[in-house]
Amino acid sequence: MSSSNSPASLEVARLGIVGAGGRMGQQLLAAILDNPATQLAAACDRPGTDVIGKDAGELVARGASGILISDDTKAVFEASDVVIDFTHFTAAPGHLAMSLETKTNLFLATTGLPAETQALVEEAAKEIGIIQAANTSLGVNLLALLVEQAAKSLDASFDIEVVEMHHKHKVDAPSGTALLLGKAAAAGREQNHDEVACYERSGHTGARPDGEIGYATLRGGDVAGEHTVFLAGDQERIELTHRATSRTIFSAGAVKGARWLVGKEPGLYSMRDVLGL
Ligand code: NAD
Image 1 (cartoon, rainbow, N blue to C red):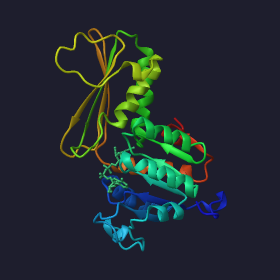
Image 2: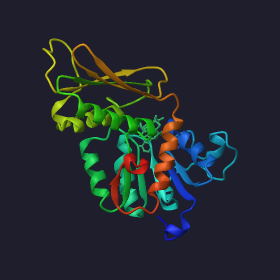
Image 3: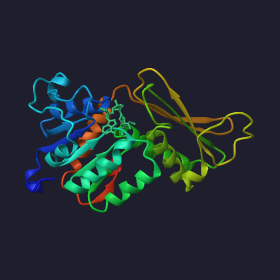
Image 4: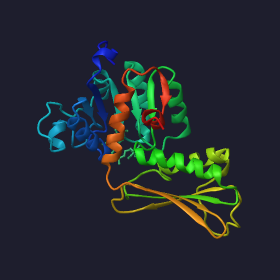
């Protein structure tokens, strides 16, 4: 974060993108270039990927932007008020280290972080501002609130199951969003999520234990993301569903969150903070 990063100089947020060539990376390039309140500060991807050296604007049919996609991650952090990360869980430790070194706030939207990486996120948030969001859309964050409320209102005889479907390229399961929704249900019931979560059923499983929160994962095609939380009781069933029909909802939410994060004090923030939910 450069020394000109004072609140007065932040009307136009200088945003950096790591993983610029990815599905979400390209959505973000377009969203930033289309938004007069944001400036694309720099963009990078892994060495050897075919987007290196390309103009970021031309890559997403916005015309020449003058920003070439590099493989220099540190240069992206140095040039940006906030860096947005939709990459791969293995990249998160390096990006956290870079954020700490350059004192640059980080929007971390990558999912599937192992516990040891999650601990690094919490440690880094003592020194930099981090938004961590398993889902950046307004709709899913609102759905999480509804799920929490429903779980709180219904008695424990209602069984809670979370079903999700994503495109076939997704590398983690269940999705970060499914976990976000399951955790919202557990919070509503005042349960410890990790003690009641059930991720697999196969063979002679026995009857479903009361209080369990079950997950089921579907993968296929180009599905941007669909989630349903079932609350199944005797003779009635509630289904709370969100369907993403385009990834633009995620890039719009991430850009909104990144603008919010500019100049924020160290801390671990969520989309609920950004959206005021
Ligand atoms: P993708 O595979 O299309 O893109 C990933 C990008 O990251 C690629 O450009 C790739 O080259 C780069 N990358 C991979 N490994 C890297 C590494 N070690 N270092 C640096 N860069 C690396 O994936 P995607 O569909 O864009 O999703 C990316 C991530 O974002 C996933 O974790 C996904 O679950 C998550 N996601 C989050 C949300 C949300 O709302 N929070 C929405 C969609 C996707």
